[in-house]
Image (tube, protein in one colour):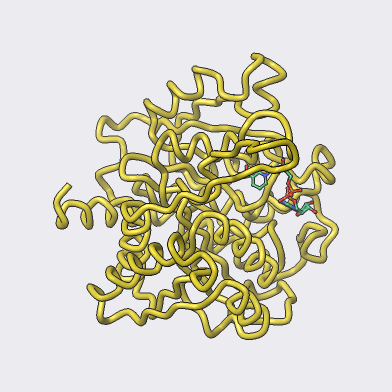
Length: 360
Ligand code: NAD
């Protein structure tokens, strides 16, 4: 790919493009993966909110993860892969991955199989959600395809195992480009590359070198570097001093949850996994097994992820409507789930967001 077409393809991954609207006038096909745990509860909420915007989506519902394993004997049925190949866009609930046993993460598998290399997690404060910080406005940009998530692990000898961290110039350069293009399109001020290159001199050193080279091509956007431990300290004491964070896969995973904590928790933070040819939209949170099936999960992270999906398929106005309605429900503070200090159910919050949308 030439330099110009690489930038163009990143820009189209990021921004809303009308061309993605169904030209035939038919409803846009999107794969819907309800997922495990609270997944079916929060994805139903998002589907109801999208329906209320009036945007017509033809959902292709597909099982994955533990629920697929129970029904079909595999966590990744062929029908799921075929659907994703066809639609190239999915709204996905969280999928269960067992700890220290069982199959490899299906999330990692899907992101790698479809080369969804850029995981974007906008993390903002909401009026009405009480936290120690008011004006958090961070964009976490996480490399999604390599690092310790490469899945290369082996036992060298009994009692000695190795997990290989893979960092390549290709993946580091393209995620850095994605971050800077995002910053340019969304008029963000700075990008901070977060690393541990004082210890992992080769791997994190390469990541930094690539980030720094790309930063040189965007003189209008401030570039900083910070060691991950110091960055975590600064995030929990002065989050306003960061704007966009650029991280490898593992640091990105951990720091995303830390950032969610700054704004009121995992129930509020949406996410998108973008590639050059498709995208999967999902909340940052997992299956929340402790509250699954109780009807009390916060649907907002998934609803905001679905707004990002609408932007992507060319319905930015509808996405903005969802964001505005969600903000107004949080600000009013009357209908909130327990994680953010209320007593309402998933369905009550969803209904309040739909009512707020109808009022505007
Ligand atoms: P988790 O995100 O599921 O839960 C952490 C805490 O946050 C829990 O107390 C939970 O109740 C709370 N929480 C999460 N989402 C919430 C919501 N919408 N509303 C209210 N509270 C919410 O993390 P975990 O417990 O470490 O992981 C559980 C499972 O999820 C594991 O199998 C893990 O592999 C999987 N997981 C999947 C994804 C994904 O599919 N993208 C992401 C993270 C974890």
